[in-house]
Image 1 (cartoon, rainbow, N blue to C red):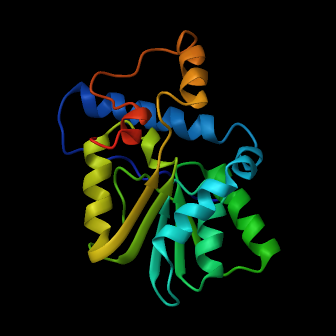
Image 2: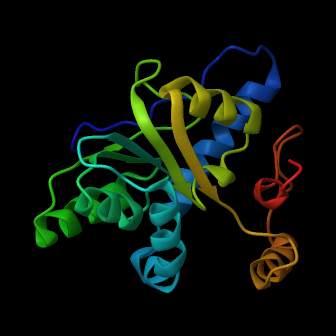
Length: 197
């Protein structure tokens, strides 16, 4: 209703794989928009704080937080003086992040975007972060390419991910029997939690 739209994944591949990934990405946007994610964000704030501390934001640096959810990582980076852009697949989460940013008096850009097909120019950010966000995109190779493309040479990247052997892995195992199988070629979010991966 407000004119926003989700940027579609790149159509660089032919055949059913790209279409299946687009359908899954659209479903992800709907799922993430269907519940008050800010309640979960409160539980994992410590993870967000550690990520931002390790990436050591500097005043004036351009910072991109992908899969920003309701904005927690983006807010911490903005408080440190970074010029922050936060993007997420879910319009609802972006609306919530915008409301929270206004309440906190923070000046940053928050917008709907797909981490598999970003509209930002090459080498436009000093720092690129994602706290358990981009790991859910089905096309891991495309996400990695986009992260590398938008980060400046010599810039910093930081991603947090769940590990399969964590309690979160158990939750996903329990949900799996109620979910359709992912499309062929889709990556698992837990792969990002493996250091060798």
